Amino acid sequence: MTTSPRDDDRLRAEAIAILRENDLGAYTIPTKGLYPFQWNWDSCLVALGLARIDEDRAFREIETLFAHQWEDGFVPHIVFHADAQSYFPGPDVWDTRRATPTSGITQPPVAGFCLRRLYETASDREAAAARTKALLPRIAAWHRWFHATRDPEATGLVAILHPWESGRDNSMDWDEALARVSPEGVGEYVRRDTSHVDAAQRPTKAEYDRYLRLVQIFRGLGWDHGALHEASPFKVVDPGFNAILIRSAEDLAALAEALDEPAIAEEAARHAAAGRAALEGLWHEGLGQYACFDRAAGALVESASIGGLLPLFALEPGHARAAVLAKRIETVCARARHPVPSHDPADPRFDRLRYWRGPLWLVANRMILDGLARHGHVDAATAIARDGLALVARRGFAEYFDPLDGRPLGGGRFSWTAAMVLEFLDLIEE
Ligand code: GLC
Image 1 (cartoon, rainbow, N blue to C red):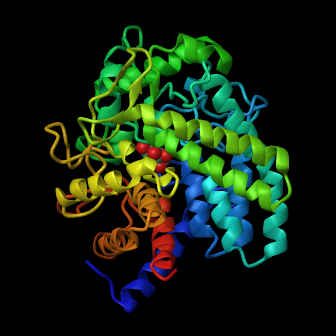
Image 2 (spheres, helix red, strand yellow):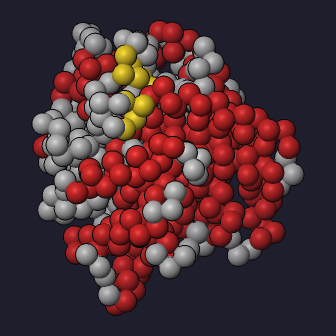
Image 3 (tube, rainbow, N blue to C red):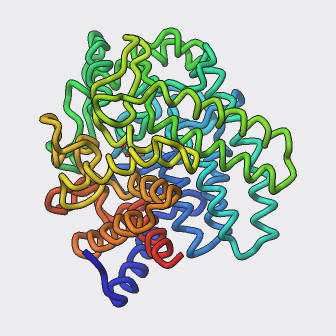
């Protein structure tokens, strides 16, 4: 599918209108109603779109997120800047006792990757250098936090302790590990998400019980991040999450090098190298891609999700696996009409409507196409960007899409979808 120049102008104008409408001044909400606060990786990715409208505002988006970094380096997945009743679980459930309430779990660390892109494409070079330089120690502290609290045995790879940390909330990747979390004692609660979106497009009640149970366990430990890894019944090493951390470390090292911060550059390069070496342990020969490692069970997870394709975004150019992985992406995409399904359609558990169990997401596509281009598959990368643009032109700025027929799913007028449209329009010209 392609778009015409007229479509492109209309898409650009509409994307900007959506970002403006979800802009609350110093941060952007993902969409009204369903997600009324600041989300971590949404904000960083949204900044890529904001940079086309207002560079100052783009940096501010990331600065606001890091203004709520905890003293230990942790950066929360949600910052509850203002009250809103339309979302559950809200600040009282998390009970992190911060001046501005936040959640106590984190999200994929795309900040390093996004900041490098902001810096390199900024037209006001001086302002970009100053603001980037000020953020470097903060991102470095977050990465250090990951290695200290989520990789206590220094394997080179970090674990997530809650499915929501992955950003791919209900992926098949978590099914077995989550099933081992007993929902006992979770109590009564009222979900809000299913009053905004059809329940068939959202996680199930059994999953939600366990999501909440994990929050209760961590809250019971007073959100002492040093204690959570040991105590958590759920700890999974996700290739997608680690690929993002490795790539951000590589980008942080490049920025630190350019901005004369040698200590940060050296540490980040060391993290990236250790992560890359360890990633090899997540290669799943049977699936022909990377897979999660369930640290509690001590085994690889049989799940062919998009998480296992994302390492293309982090592998060094020339890496032997890159060509195999690019081929695997092609195979998975050939099983759907629109790239890239969040799970392999050949898996009987594939669910074209349900959130991260099949639908396609433009933010994941952003990273996949970056990986393809990085390894020389420029046409395949451009095809993914073009399909995404055509999909939005025809079906609107949805949260996610059915990869078999392009049907728009989840919330509407979505910020990161708008930001990705602006990104894709630029990328196909770059
Ligand atoms: C959902 C997504 C997550 C995203 C959040 C806000 O929870 O799975 O990745 O950050 O919504 O858009």
